[in-house]
Amino acid sequence: MKKLLVLFVSLMAVLINGCETQQVRPQQESNIHTQKDSPADVYVSLGVEYMNRGLNDVALEKLKRAIQVDPRSSDANNVIAVLYDRLGESSLAGVHYKRAVQLEPNNSSAQNNYARYLCGVKDYESADRHFLQALKNPLYKSPLLALTNAGTCATKAGKYDDADKYFRTALQRNKRFSPALFQMAKLKYEQKNYLSVRAYLQRFTLAQKITPASLWLSIQTEDKLGDKNAVASSVLKLQQLFPDSHETSLLEKSKFSYNISR
Image 1: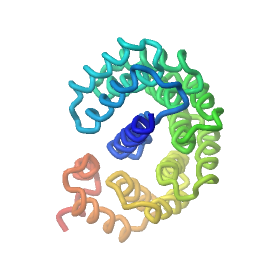
Image 2: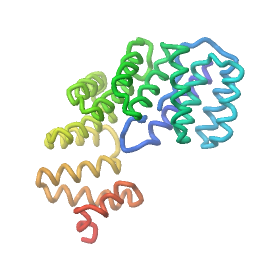
Image 3: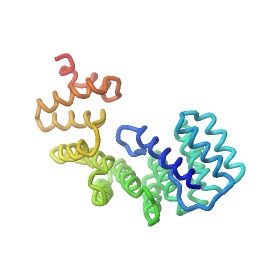
């Protein structure tokens, strides 16, 4: 079981780091909870390991086997849902996320993942309920992740006050939690509070290395604030550090593209 815990945490880190736009798909999270040992565990651990290696076809085979040997394994359903999400099989992901939380309501990882899924299909009220259910568990290892995901979902729903509360709660617990810092910056941009955007981006940069998404947001923000030098600096960094990024592609199609040739 301890090995399974390590693998789940490893998968969670890969999924968080592999996303972005700083949306916390940070991400799809699959860390272990308190479910009792199951005959499915060995297959789940193998599935997670193959997912971490990018061998999704083999991972799917192992996770299907996990559900065959124990259809009532919440962890098996949660992880195969994460894989289906990764493969773009949204309907199948939803079925297994729902099954995971039905089998084990205290599986906060599954609750968080199912809430993310519901947010993705714009069922915002249901998503919020499942985020809150994830956060009710005092043993949950990743409450900052769920709080940030909940805030991101509230932003999408246009519930800016709720989003602000979720992000602030996360940052009260860890003022350097970079996903919450970035999402708060994005929220403040939506609210046209550009000085606050700048402040949160500065905190974000102190907490972790700059990203294409943070530079792109900085470019737009400094343009709103009228700081041409800051715009030019961020444009140059984005071009030089992340030439193949999606944000650089957006830059080249934007009004800021004139800075690239200078």
